[in-house]
Image (cartoon, rainbow, N blue to C red; front, side, top):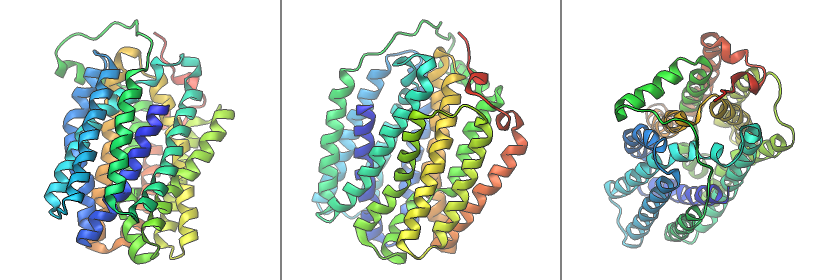
Length: 393
């Protein structure tokens, strides 16, 4: 959890600087959208092969290599900033390197936790892990916003140091060895086997795809610099608070989940929380008051946390050890598409129709997805207890 906390903290500090710096240099929402796109493209190329690799090699080494690449990317952003470079292609190139690192690390990280705890403790471990992650998401944007007042180079320098420390931390982690039989065949055949496994289980497929389309439409992160600068007029520090608000709601819910686990009606609760996320997104999009906006974002984070908790537990419990890397890579691919492509969608929509319509339409789109998925995946809606989806090896 300490390594996850550190990497997330560094990523959030860096993301605040990238978003504000790109918009400050271009004043173009489309440029913010391309930040997500250039990170997604290398990730989508690597994530499925990386998932297959995670099922066959030491996941620690995959994470160590990815963190070394992130050190290089952060150092690259630092050098571009100190050197006064303003060409966007240079920044996009470094961000593409960062996307490649995420493509390598996410399948390994997604499948890492079950090798540290027993399955009966997994839901609680997921809640603790999520709490650690969301705490970093709270601190990172706030720290990043204040540091940006000193200049983006400070953000990138600190992030570089943090990533170096995560390499050291990951080196010292020990995990249990899986006794599951490894899949045979070519890499392509093993990847197809993972896709087939997910497609044949509507609970898995429905949970992962619900997050993809709901967050793809409802994500607002890419447009927060515009809200902070032009709509709410609160500056870089205000941007840090806007980035932090969803994590505040999420970590409060995560703390509750570590003490009182969700035991009944898990599928219905997940759908309800995604709907709340969409409604709160609409409220944020229409708000002109900084504090109302913070509350709305806080609600989105709280609702998303419950959805993430349920989805993560279902995925981990419904996946055998020898498939975790590949299913984790598919989940990472869907998450990356919802986040990075969602940022691109938001930037392009804002460029065409305006920032506020882009957010409001996205929120209503999320609500529509919830209604459609409840009809398409009734087994997911009817899941009552986590034990119903647990695979026995």
